Amino acid sequence: MAVHKPAFIHETHLDTIKDVVNELQRLDKLLADTDLHQYQLFNGAYFMITSAVQRSVTEDYFKNPKFIEKFIVTFASYYFTAINDTVSDSSELSVPWSKLNDYAKQKSAPKFVSLLLGANAHINNDLPQVLKTLMEKENTEDLLSDIVKIDKLLMESGKQIIGTFDETNKIVDLLKRHFQFMYYRPAMYTIRYWRIIAWKNYRKLKKEQTAMQKITRRSIKIANRWLVVSKALS
Image 1 (cartoon, rainbow, N blue to C red):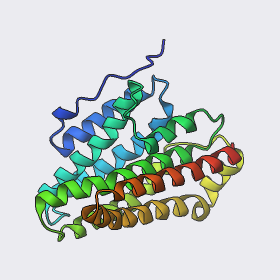
Image 2: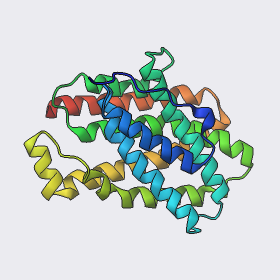
Image 3: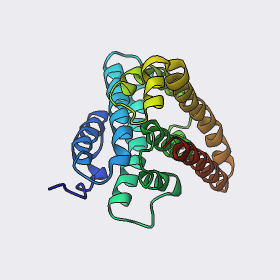
Image 4: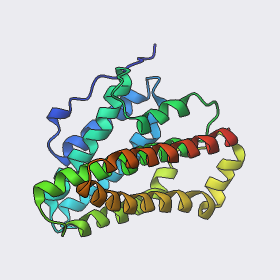
């Protein structure tokens, strides 16, 4: 009998990248036996990318590994909060993350859309807030180069991520298997572009707190567009 609600994630116990990786791995197993399948692909991708960051920290890839650890832990806390809010049907669930639940209502929806919806909520809506919090504490913007290095790891993980699933739509799956320039590259470069915009929106948020409303509206608009695409391809 399937378990319908995974255990809550205890965010206060997350202090290191290793903690985040372990929690993502635990959550991946839980999601397989729940009715929250809309999060499963994104969670798997998150695990792969964060694992790559963890390895890179030990290989002296980053100039400021301590900052990267803070960044990964703080950033992940937004995702884990969204999971907790979804599980508890909380009214606090941010609207961009709630779009994944709207996606779950579509039958035979392309799987890559769930990945993009998760990335949209986490990057376009969450990332500017994370950067504002951390940069204020660090009091420097020289850390951008390390953030950009994560983009490289993200792009390198892309092919590994799309190899973990098959599309139910035969045409979409054909594109995935044989025409990656039409399937993989547009999605990955879209995510990379979102990360660039998130950095710019962090600067806006730094100057004006009300900018967050515009940031969230943009994220919602992007999610709605992908839901239209998903419906058309279903």
